[in-house]
Structure formats: C-alpha cells, structure tokens
Length: 329
Image (cartoon, rainbow, N blue to C red):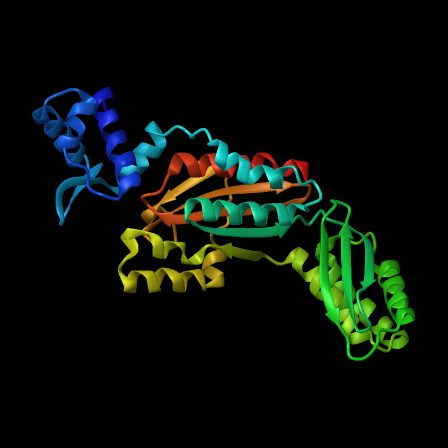
C-alpha cells in the first residue's frame, strides 16, 4: 500500500491525465503537494518503480499505467456526486413512467454515451420465468398491423407487420384467438417450440394470411429468449486522442461489429465492475465498466467502453443512477 503522500500524488497524476490527456510533470505537482521538486521526483520515482506510472516517449512527464489505474479504482477513487446538469438530463426519463423497461434503459444509456463520449452496449435477455399472458394485434392501416406479446412480468414485445393486400380483420381475430388459446400460460422459453409444432399447423388450416401473421408473432417471441444487444456511440472512440492511430481504430471498430465478441461483454457479477485493459476480452487499449440488471423478470448487462483514461468516478455514478431507477418501470 502507498503512504498518504504517494496516494495523493498518484491521485493527482491519474485525475490530471484523465482531464487533460497530457503527461504530468513534477513541477506541476510541487505547489499542490507543498513540497520540494526533489521530494516529488523521488515519490514519482517510487511510483514508477512499482509500475503505477510510466514515462511517455514524447515528454518527460508521467502517465498512469494500467496497474496505476487499477490501484486508483480499487483504493483511491470515490464515486462522484452527479452535477445538476447530469441529473437533469436523466430525470426526464426517470419521471416518464410510461416508458417500458427496455426503452428506459436504451434511452438512458444513449444519453450517458453522449454525456461521456463513451461507447455503450446493452445486452438483454429475458428471464425464463416469463409466462405469456396475452397476445394482441392492432391494425394500423389497410395492409399493416402491430403484433403485441405481453408476459406476466409486464414485459411487452411488438412487431410491425406489412401484409400483401388488405388485412382481413376476421383473419386477424381468428389468428389471435388461436394463438391465445394455445400459448397463454406457456413459459417463454417453450413458446417457439409450441408455435412451430402446434400453432402453425392449426393456423394454416383456418387463416389465409397465416404465414405473414405467424412470422410476426414468431419474431416477437424469439426476442424474449434470444440474447439481443444494441449499441450507442460507436464512433465516440474517434474523439479520443489516444486513438489517433487509424489501424488501432479499425481494429476496435471491427470488434464492435463482431456480435459473438460483443455478446461476451455480458456481466456475471453483481454491482458495477471495472475491467481495465488486459482485464477485458475486447482490447488492451480500452476499459469496460459493466453492471448487471435484473428487474421484473428482465435481466441483462449495461457496459460503457472507452479509453483507459476515462472519468471512472463519474461513469460509475451515472451507471448507478440508471440502475437504481429501473425498478420504477
């Protein structure tokens, strides 16, 4: 463990570098620490020997190492109290109780991505405890409708459907009646099988437009049981000075397009967890801050991805704010 002066010194170096993206010199720290430049240099040498800070090739100053960031996160950082502006930007969503959970998460994370210039990933998977309670269809025009699936956990999936020719209202009613009769009360992870082997043959006998209607409901139900993800701010890394290397940017952006790799971002631990550089599977050049949520039968992971030089204290507080306000959905 570091002594109090070494701790303060590392804190200043990390937070100054996060703020300005410039190596920190000993001269800049003397007045703050109220000690001689020789003392500061000695303490910086100690931090460097312990691999908590490192030199750069472009300056005599020092920057935090991956180990230094980890020490800062584990022993120094305190979650930052959100500013009035931060809270104001999120409060409109928090107080909008008409938003379903998925919409609340997606919109909140989009705002946080914009506020922090980080890339956001949402990985969601519904609980297998969801049971279908109702299926509905809402005609929108002569040849389009919205298919809606509702579960006992209050989760709703909907799909827009466009059919060839005019919609026969009687056909729709017949389809909904058959589906409700055959799958209401079925656990969500069993619905796809019931639809394919039991419902589809029956609908085919009684409904002329059965294929398009069936496909719409099958797609909606599949979204409950399949891992899904969405992203926001993929280009935000381009704004960061440490990613001015085009090859490095191409490599990371290509990983964002790898669905299997992104799916591995999902969190298994509770709370907010921070994976710096080599600690994550995405890239040694980034940090991933992740949190798992489980609300009303819906579970998933929210992750924010950016350079190791990120505002850890603020990001942690923003994620905490989002997750604490999920239970109102």
